[in-house]
Length: 281
Image 1 (cartoon, rainbow, N blue to C red):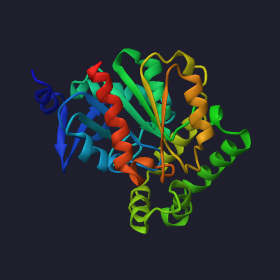
Image 2: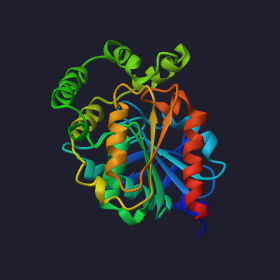
Image 3: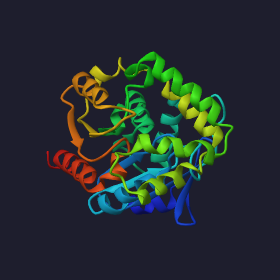
């Protein structure tokens, strides 16, 4: 059976422009585009697959690009509680099984980058490479204790609030000052569709520490970072670069924390060049 046939018949259903798969009792929504080496995109907290629209459109000329809505986000169902990073990693592996993907480039943004690291920890043979964008070695592993405790406390307040009361306060810290109002409104709209359960559980798993894993990563690793990232500053990028063997760091000028949205041409070029260099090798 071809890869395309596996996508069409491997337990997934096409629904309203997206695909949907049953994985471990959860309904997981995802988008898929293109042909070529698989590239899996993992969004951050308060995001979903829509944050990857520019990557799905551009990188699908050379790659099979898959962007999921993690359980607890977008059009996927909420996970049970408790639900840890190992559970999300297992769910992602199950989704790859449904689609028919044995091994992929794994790209994670922010919280998705922490998940990408956990996926590698548990499924190294299924990870062709890691691309970690504007992320952390877990909040506990990258941020001062006072900062991550403040973030956790803020989320516990926000989960019971309407989006209109807290999303606007997030937006300035996610972009550079030069970001257009249209782009800010686009992301605010996506974030406003948050799931309270998913938001709470994802943030609780952000309070982790992956520093023990970093020196043991044995796949090619690319770090992509917005030069003006306020939430995961360049000091975090350099921490990961210095800890992961032979990791490469690409700094995206004119971009904040969501560098894939703010500077998609530069972001996509970095990802494309990295993945193609591995394919050629």
